[in-house]
Amino acid sequence: MKRESTHLKILQLLKQDFGQPISGTTLASLCGLSRTSIWKHVQNLKLLGYEITSHPKEGYRLTGLPDALIAEEIVPELHTSWAGRHLHHFAQIGSTNEVAMELALRGAPHGTVVIAEEQTQGKGRLSRSWISSPRLGIYASLVLRTPLPLMEAHHATSVAAVALSEVLITIWTLPARIKWPNDILVNGRKIAGILTELQSDQDYTRFLVIGVGINVNHQPRDLEGPFRYPATSVALECGRTTNRKDLLVQFLARFENQYDLYLQEGFSAFLPRMELLSAVLGKRIRVLVGNREIRGRAAAFSPEGGLRVWDESGNEETIWAGDITRLEGME
Ligand code: BTN
Image (cartoon, rainbow, N blue to C red; front, side):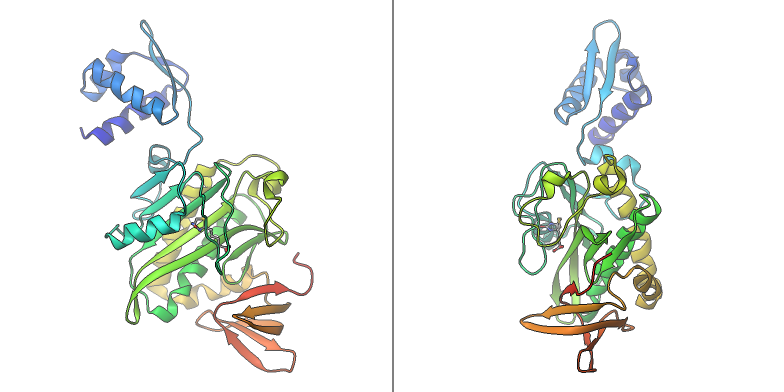
């Protein structure tokens, strides 16, 4: 048995008997290892944050799981064929997007995920920063290697926004809406943001990195400070702490499913849901496109996913990116 799978097998056996003792001899015979090797594996699991007691007569007893988005916790729960199958976990790094870009440059496979418990230089759109306090949120970046025409790379952001909103709606029963193109709002407050970066060969993407930041267990004190937009978290909206692993696993499954659907059926399959989930369609908005400000009404999405805006002089313009503020309440 490979070292990694032995490690997972021991963990699985300990989890099956959570809180109950299992002897070193039993573990050794079930894994085909010596008791000394079992002891070494158990020491490594403890270093990862698993609470395991050992007693000479009883054996090992798993009493607590780490609150960390490590492969040992995520991979056994994944219902995906590619998303998250290669997972890199960091206790603290600058930015998961930066590391995912580097890994992608070195050939990391489609679906590779980089996760951090804390980012010291989390990046938001438009050169903003993304506050990434330790263990409160999900800070994850996903490498996509399916070449897309450069002009359509923004579709991947929309697919991620739809997938994440639908997970928050269906499983966490939150009224999530998309503030086009990349913010997820709940009750008018920002709960998540998406930052897509890419490398291209001429007119096609070589790879994309979809960075997702979700406020999960933030309390009001964690959301004070330099947030540009009123912010909220899953815990605040649901009134209880949320398991970050469950949310990440659900998001990866839905994203994989929806991204494969997008590749098969094209972007038109997403438009009805983008419309349904939009926080801006039909509303009066102000959009900053570079230094230019457009005021008007968000009228519709174009078939390619641009936002059609009727400005105040009655002209229609399709925008492909921008920073939107709604001019009436963001319910
Ligand atoms: C935004 O709303 O402006 C986008 C925020 C994206 C934040 C995520 S957190 C994980 C990934 N790594 C980063 O540095 N940024 C993205």
